[in-house]
Amino acid sequence: MTEPSEFERLMDDKVDPRRLEQQLLLLDAAEQISILMQRQGVTRTELARRIGKSKGFVTQILNGQHNMTLRTLADLAWALDARVRVAEVEDAASSPKASRRQRRTQAAQSSGADERRGS
Image (cartoon, rainbow, N blue to C red):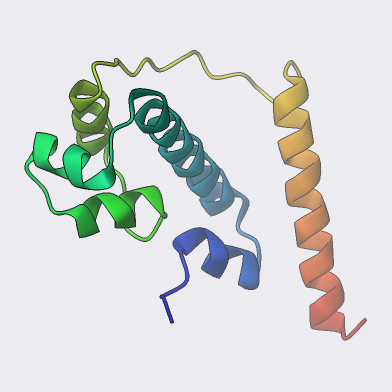
């Protein structure tokens, strides 16, 4: 049995909105790397070779079982002839996506509160 990812552990525990945002960002980054790999026909083994790491390391990064640093993200993108850009941050009031995320966080928090109350 594989160890649960940080995202899975986070969802099993009380929801910490800040940690949830961290995990969502890591998930988005891993998804974009996976899409690039798929489009280019690059395997995890090949990607690992290109960045000088093990296949296991790449697997852990893409599965959310290892913290992806900005340096690692830049390495992965470089190995796939891509460039990562950080877009401006939107606040919840001006972004429909952020509003959905905010609603999702609030729903998870209320769900956790219900569980703690025994509902």
